[in-house]
Image 1: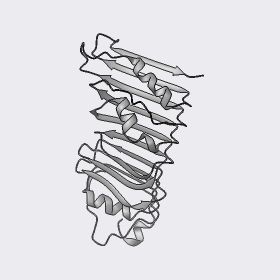
Image 2: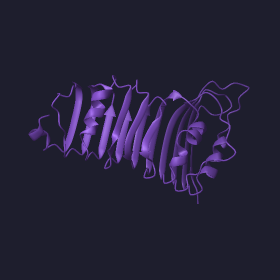
Image 3: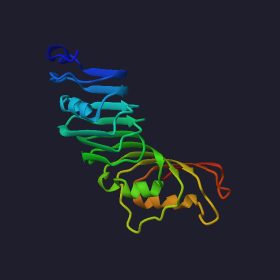
Image 4: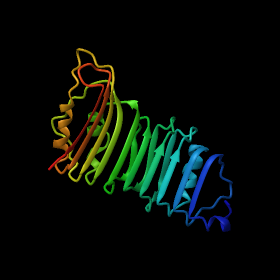
Length: 231
């Protein structure tokens, strides 16, 4: 399958629960458009080498690849539009030379670096490490997401954020969904869902704001869901 003649026929490749080491004479998958790797034992170097040989990739999904500590693709992947990474618990960096339209990421908070994010329209982030939603939205990478349409963020919060004086703007954002688990709340910290009204300044074109909150605080209901349709 990895030979020069056989590989030229592949358009889609899905690997699950295997150990993968590319042969020394591996050339490329010149027509591969979709790559899915789930529970694959593969090194950082072999992933980067594999991606460098697949110039027509449009969709990549990498899930539960527990050997990976970084996901790098420094050579341009000009056709890559959809990236999904989840369950790679040791990953500390994602850097891909591409121009995405859709990004789905689930895992610890790590640097997400792309050649450009000007084309990103839909982002779904599930952070398994503790962070604050407002902090992440304002300092994660919002200044380069000017054309974002939908944003779904799930995270665990232990501290209340302080809204910045000059917020970044998501000028095209239409739909924002936040799913928050708020823990460690005490008398010194007041939890107020109105903190998130700040997002209305960030997104002047927002049409739907969904706020789903679970908390161990007595100051707010243990489970709260608000959906605003902004007219």
